[in-house]
Image (cartoon, rainbow over all chains, first blue to last red):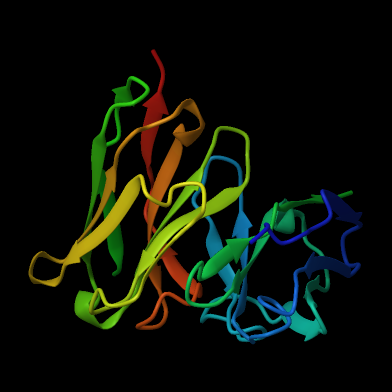
Length: 111
Length: 121
């Protein structure tokens, strides 16, 4: 299994929307709705933002949403805020032998 | 409050072994799968290994298969990672993490602060 593919970086201005893609295969992203997204600020542990493709944990703003089309999952952040600037990682279930794959990470810059 | 506290990280020589431990509290440990996830300095997240609530379902990344062994002791609310034949590329911060489900699916809802493993001669 290869890591999931994410863009190295994305950017947007405050108030705008950005979408981060996460491309896998039919054996991982495309085959299951177990996609999760994590936010990581420098020097901090990652934080769960989306799980089971589109569910938000308690406390995560509804500006964050998840979706999927085919083998590509997406994280959309609307109404960008300065504190959203961070690294974002996608993660997918990939079957019983190697259950979990992460994406390479995307650096979000709020201009 | 969920707490995951890792220990055991150290500076070790290539080829040596190390055992990481994770003490869990604040949730019913024996109901959830657990994972180890690592992050090399300046790099992204890499899933290492996961284990189901009852230790029946276990998985490893290809990069550690045959060298690392994950285990858990539900009576002690503890997760372990036995790392053998360590290589320089195993140098990373190792996070103990909790899955939101009983099988290691990957919906990781809690992370520890990590323990640093450095492999160098």
